[in-house]
Length: 273
Ligand SMILES: Nc1ncnc2c1ncn2[C@@H]1O[C@H](COP(=O)(O)OP(=O)(O)OP(=O)(O)O)[C@@H](O)[C@H]1O
Ligand SMILES: [Mg+2]
Image (cartoon, rainbow, N blue to C red; front, side):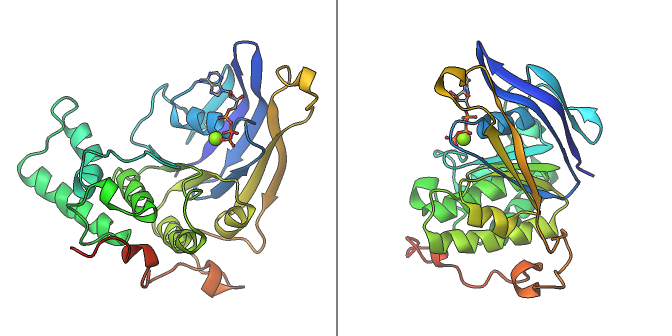
């Protein structure tokens, strides 16, 4: 279970109202795409789901329980850039979450726990198409590979909710299409609920089960600070996409993808592995 309930949430920074009276129930295993004009509060909303920011009013519940006021292992996040640590290898980045939960200060695992975490990390690295790159540093990876790494880093903690803030926005179209295939497969294979901010409508309608638009209802410059954005559109994708189930309408496009096939960014600058 991983149902999110957002109840009458407001977010204000000083005198500026960013979000106004936002209510939304996200079913367990749904994939919600959030769209809306720049500056309307999409990232702010995502940061509240993460626990990095608190609503000024209203409640956010995960499986009926109020979200703790700080990020936790039940919520993973991938940003457009800089989700991974540049001074850690691919393997180090994926292991990090496990190490931090094992020992908050030393960030080390020992013995059987380390071996099992290593196995899990290697398997996840292979699942996102990065096998062979375990010892590379992020700067030695292409943009697409870095985002695959960021996904693996978030997924090793088996989050109930995966939060994505324009994760594929900086990628070339071909590479973006490949990572969409990966994203779809991961969503089908895991139990997680996904909330993804995107500027790309095509991406929203390709991946999501539901597309939610945020907008300010009044946008006169003199009123800008006094009214926040709220949900103005809420579109359920038809035919419905269901996590783990092949679509009866277009199985090739929407069903679980069993093979990643060859991906272009795997070929990028990795001649020496
Ligand atoms: N920590 C903060 N302190 C003060 N104001 C903030 C803070 N974070 C965000 N804001 C303001 O909240 C508004 C919404 O910002 P946010 O980054 O959520 O927008 P966005 O919809 O994600 O935009 P974009 O599509 O450009 O990423 C902006 O006016 C921004 O200046
Ligand atoms: Mg943003």
